[in-house]
Amino acid sequence: MPPSSVVFPLVIVAGGAGQHADVVLEAALLSGAPVAGVMDLTGRARSFGDVPMLGGADRLRDGAFIRAHALVPAAGDHEFRLQVLEAATRAGGVLGRVVHPAAIISPNASIGAGSVVLAGAIVATHATVGELCIINHAAGVDHDAILGPGVNLCPGARLAGAVQCREAAFIGMGAVVIQGRVVGRRAVVGAGAVVITDVPDGATVVGNPARPVARR
Image 1 (cartoon, one colour):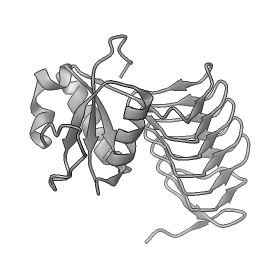
Image 2 (tube, rainbow, N blue to C red):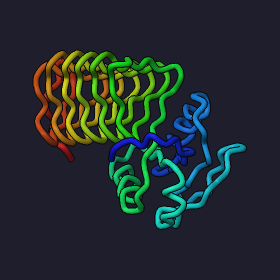
Image 3 (cartoon, helix red, strand yellow):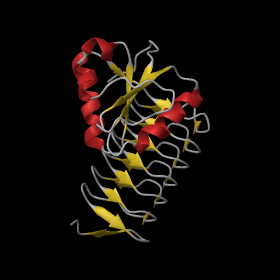
Image 4 (tube, rainbow, N blue to C red):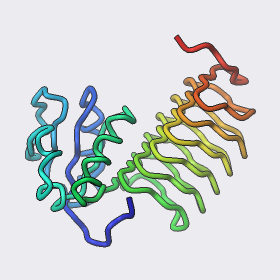
């Protein structure tokens, strides 16, 4: 989905356990972006302080509402983020992006629609972050790295130069991927792992150096 040149008020779409929405909402407010409110798909009527609650899953079927706002999916679950993308696309709407003011983004980097970059994160020159990605607190994306749609970098994860992470790859807390390596589609890199060889699609790797393990 191409980004819109029109600045729409953001709607933070809470899903999953819901707590990630608090983090995304705070980042959006601190960035100075216009925030219309929170759409709660958790079904638990969470409170978000003084920020208006704008309904639940029914809003994803309200085309006029979607077209008047930019939706920001706020959950770690990639399937949930895809659900929000599909709703926005179906209604002719757009996704917003949130970048915390304490993140460092190169002017030569690109951040895709629906993505979130949180405090302390660094996205270096000529890096590409695709749609629906999460660059969590203090994560690093070095020069010329390419992140496909839905990649999730947990807090403190580090990608060296020219790393490629394909669709919905998950990089655990504090994990490191050395330069030029490829992490495959829907692969999982465990917390603290050090990746020195390519990770195949769908594989889970852990340890230093990272080695594959069987998924349960």
